[in-house]
Length: 201
Image (cartoon, rainbow, N blue to C red; front, side, top):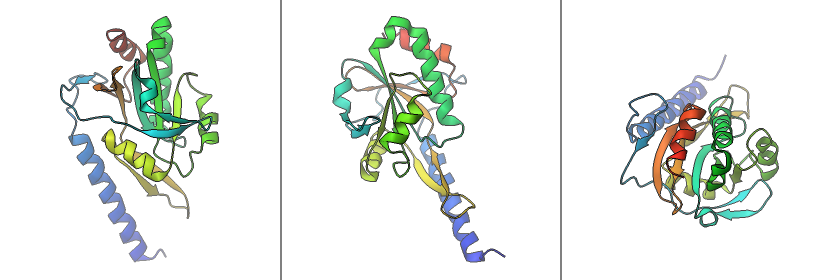
């Protein structure tokens, strides 16, 4: 029979993670329609980062100045939200045609323990080739997540040593100066995302 103290600890962790997630989501205004973008005139979202891409190259936010960024935080073992968001971004980029050259999709892992450059490179093959996959040390990831007001937490699974990641699931649109423009839910449709981007390009 499972140790009741262990079960109690897991319950406390789950409640804490849920509370933090709710608190983070509560910071954002809710779109009027599912998948719609929400404009925020003075949102303190975004900031400098220095991370490592899927090819092992160090990358900074400054490299993407002059282009819009679509930034999404997730992890390669994510079963639903992350592939949905990245596939949506992939389809939106295709719909933009030549205008897509003005957009840089950026995926930042919240699971640096497992998401090495090699793991990210393998994962990247499933999506648009222009998606920049980034990882780093736990401290570097924590700094980037803090700048973008992203919640994430490790959640242990039943099998010893296994875990998943709870995390925010917004796609952030940053302007060519690196300033926050708006955000989209991960389930925004490719058509709606492409239309919103066309208005900016």
